[in-house]
Image: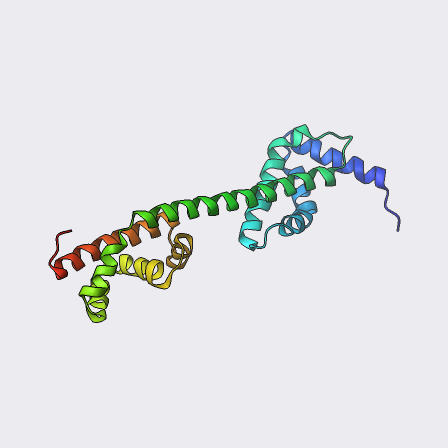
Amino acid sequence: MTIDRPALRAEECALLAAVGHGDRAAFTRVHERYRPLVQHWVRQYLADACVADEVVQDVFFELWTIADRFDPEQSAVAWIRTIAQRRAIDRLRKARADRDRDLRIGARDLELVDHAHVERAESVLDRRDLYRAVRALPDRQRDAVVLRYLVGMSGPETGERLGVSTATAKSRARDGILALRRVMTTASGTCP
């Protein structure tokens, strides 16, 4: 069986032209035809299947909104592949920028924490008192403090483990450290 490439190209161009005019049935056909290819292209860049599925959805949303810009002199497959690759690369860049920002914020937050209180607490209180003080924290703060400062997880890792945003995880850990500072300074007889 031979493929009639000019007829296939004409069909692809007609479908994209119809999508550009808002034809939902044509969009459904384009989606059914190209979704497996788009998924394949996107997953070459993104390992996380959930993130890849979001990007695939973004590709088809973009295709729906800009199909009227498709140049019939181009290959439909190449045009869609370009959109998919650009979207996947954009998502990679965003993830890298988010990670770099979290690292910068995490380093800044770490600098803001007065570790002298923790060191003083270890020298003034025995470990049992320290554990008792940590256990006295509200559950959310305790979990964040333990993961962030005792286990050594980063802010994003803590947030992921707790099922909350990175900012929420960092806030809980910071509030927990402040509460521990109050408990430990009271226990050691010093003023905060």
